Length: 264
Image 1: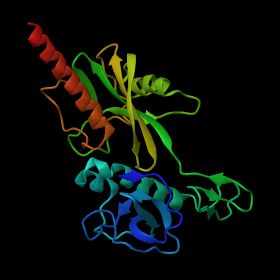
Image 2 (image 1 turned 90 degrees about the vertical axis):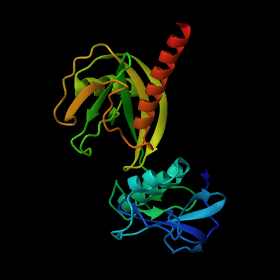
Image 3 (image 1 turned 135 degrees about the vertical axis):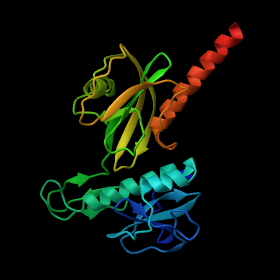
């Protein structure tokens, strides 16, 4: 499993090669290359099953390199932390090579994930963007929506970035109302998930709708509808927290029906 400790003394070991959100496949059909001397610019990343792992951020990806979503769909869930960490750190190293304050080249520090500007002293760390992701329910029905970017037929939960000065709970109320015109009452926190596309932290919630009247914004949401457990559309991929929210609700509904039948 992943151990979040930088292998600072290592200069040899397995390597992950990342370019533009794609990861080079290793010889064993995983994202890991065979143990080898690390290139001079390799970023110590973590330990994987007690082996030091380095990250090589490259300029160009070969066409056959799978992207992050493809890797997550083909590998067991236990790989998610390693792939997510590699993608997010690679995006940060690529996008923060220069100081955001004065524009001078930034230098990578060894002891932590940090880029330091020797000219003005500014230091930046990997960017993490907090988002809410919410399954709105009304009884056993679920409100699912389509983004214009989704594959045909896929529906998912509602999501959006948390704005400056806003709490996660306030963001749930605002995003749901903005996207589908529904006011929600009681909300319940579920869990979080790092989402490396490119650097989101998804905070999952359940929210109870005050009504079932939908009014989509027509921009971020192309369509939205209420779905019941026996009539579901194409759902988001199993590795996503949106799918976990849906599956959790379906299990709770099934358990409630089962309890009712036993009582009768």
